[in-house]
Length: 454
Image (tube, rainbow, N blue to C red; front, side, top):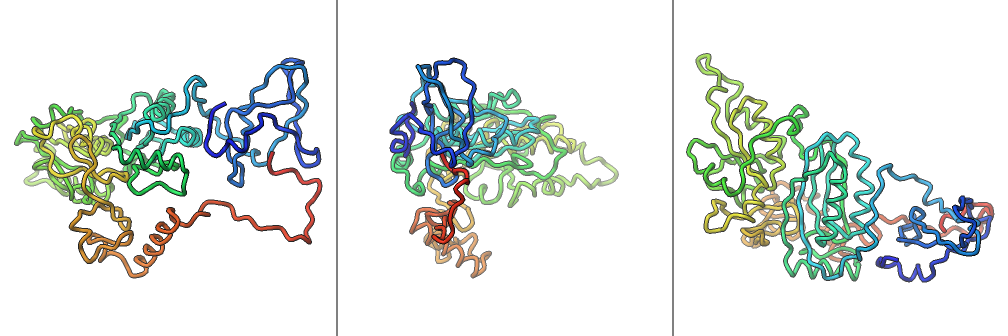
């Protein structure tokens, strides 16, 4: 039987003893053999409605013996039927990852025709939780986009499950190492299981978000589809030659808080606050809706080279430009992260640091963690100089958002920060738990009421 945290005290015995018949719902199971014992072996625990470990009903294994299986108790907590997509069981020959196994962060995406994406959400989240893989994943009708952290074996198991769907095979992925300090924090919290992981861990070790959205990267233009057409990929080894060409217009597709801390030499910064603003910037910058002296402006469209953090935004951005009539559209394969990983710093045309969407905040050449921190008031990167400014208040504001926040918003941020400093989690230790109220003694329980747990 596999080992799971916090379950040892509950699983001291491998036998489930049926409760009194009036407090349980009994179901007869057909026996493939007349010699089956009245014992049921559990392969894993799960959580009951109250949050405590309970045996799982979906993974019973029966063993032959000299008795006949009579009844099995069913919990009302399990009355909801899960998704039709089965969650894969890890091979029994593979042990659970060692507590001190090295970690890795992998960003991945794939554009695909994926209308039934919602069916993958629950089994994917359950698998990540079982393997202690943290991070965030977006599922949408146009594909999948995510960034996850865990041991290499666990992360590969999650990615293999995703690629088990033929439409998602060939994920585009970028891998980043995790430093020794972040590993120590992650593993320390895995073992101790506190309310939340430390601020320096790449992700909260015990938390994975799997969200359903309309788009895996929001542009707001359903007609733009990278599945149909996309620009030409350029590898990191060929990128310098392309952007050094004076006839090439280099465009940074990221937002202003990202470009502020680093970009490629000579790149055009659209200064957008969200990706939704990019289409209107293209119209204005290249004057696509205007024509001088009756000429078609599309005849003078330049060669364009685009880049972003990991490559996913460029997929839609290049598709957009192609739909506007641009003929030569290129984008950096694997994005900035792949370039910083492959190109030596002595040959690099990158200036500054690259913002990343996890607790590392920024990375430098070789994907080593950078020097920026995160303002938890606006989620923008801040430098050491920003943190010395009078507008900076930890967890509340920074020079980039101080003037944009009302006094009421700042006070709410202070209350949130006090909760985090006291409990290690926003909302306190009972966040997400069902409140329990003791039933008055004058109210007697219905003796025929079914049991709510096994």
